[in-house]
Length: 267
Ligand SMILES: NC(=O)C1=CN([C@@H]2O[C@H](COP(=O)(O)OP(=O)(O)OC[C@H]3O[C@@H](n4cnc5c(N)ncnc54)[C@H](O)[C@@H]3O)[C@@H](O)[C@H]2O)C=CC1
Ligand SMILES: CCCCCC(=O)CC\C=C/C=C/C=C/[C@@H](O)[C@@H](O)CCCC(=O)O
Image 1 (cartoon, rainbow, N blue to C red):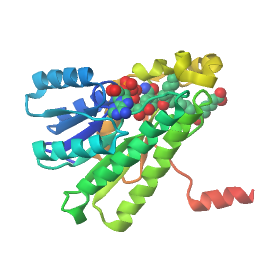
Image 2: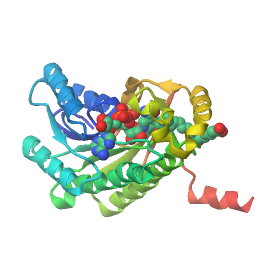
Image 3: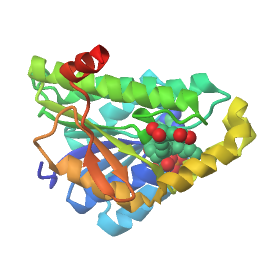
């Protein structure tokens, strides 16, 4: 997909991976609406992008993805300012095993809400232009991370939901593609979440295990995942695909087919 002149929404776009994805889109000539709860960082990121890319290319909307009203209003404001939407990246996420309901509300319900709103705006049957939705899952959406079971569950949920929606879009002729990114550990603020007892909850005693898993898989920079995001957003052939990003590079995940599952269950 050529990105010049396209309009994108990035949730959790004020910092970390979301900021990195927004920068990729801006470099390709897109306009970007950043949705985030943290007003200071959102404004600071918009100011930095204004300086680098010009004043009319970025919008910042205060938006908590757990609020239907704030999310709907932010989509509306983006359409009013930029004249439509072509790309939506549902990226906002946290790790909090103590307040696990908040983790589910942001990481899974927030992605579901953001995807439904995106489909409503992009879908050709509603007068939309079609486009692409990229949901940010994790390697913890493909295999279990024992140090954060609820975070793991939300990311598995994002993978299952996005794959099903990709099929629904294809069967329904929405003109919208839905894909996922599944990175291993990335050096952002989120990475230290499990070092804090109030975030790690009952799994605080497993912080050494977390350290070992991190050493085994290694850690990425935001720019590594931004490069994978660029590859995925430019590739118009993919729908329902998950790009696994690791230290050796990025590869598409080969999900088992129904035949694979049935074959294995016979063994
Ligand atoms: N850092 C890592 O190791 C990995 C991160 N991910 C995923 O990438 C996504 C981004 O994470 P990072 O950039 O690492 O974290 P981060 O903490 O640096 O950035 C997350 C952003 O989301 C925003 N946010 C949090 N709650 C929100 C809400 N309710 N509404 C709107 N915005 C909200 C924060 O204010 C922040 O700007 C998350 O979904 C995370 O699960 C996936 C794999 C690895
Ligand atoms: C501080 C935690 C931040 C987590 C943020 C992420 O989303 C990063 C996820 C990164 C890696 C996940 C790896 C999961 C691997 C599992 O498939 C499994 O292989 C782990 C096995 C652990 C073991 O054998 O001890």
